[in-house]
Amino acid sequence: MKDAQELLALQASLSQPIAEKAPFYGRHLYEIASATQAEFARVAEAQYEEQNRKMQTLVDNVAKNAPAGSETAVAVIKSAITAANTTYETVHRATKLAVEIAESNFNAAVTVATKAATKATEQATRTAKKSVA
Image (cartoon, rainbow, N blue to C red; front, side, top):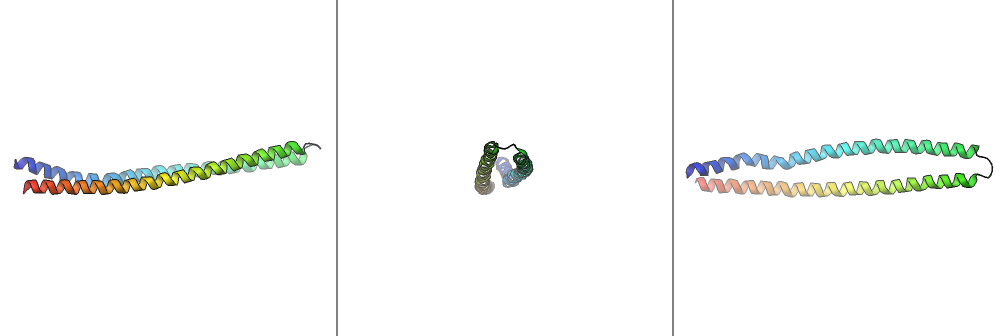
């Protein structure tokens, strides 16, 4: 019976570091994924802004060289571009907010999981020590 109790104590002592480190590894992986996503978003936003500048320049050039009477068509194009930019900004802000909320929820979950893992490991260690004694 003592061998089984010693085995339980050994198992509890070996599992404690794993249980304590697992949430930190998960957090580290999340941080890597989050940083990668942020870099992709930064590059995509820079490309969007560059394309937007090019489109605005094109529309301005068309407006300057447009024949008389085409002001309405140019105004419609400018209005469409403004509407597209407004939609993009709205979606961008909503996405950023959703990412911040998800990150906050993830951090809260990791904190709870870490505390629970530590508490369970401590409980298992105490139980194993009592069994050995």
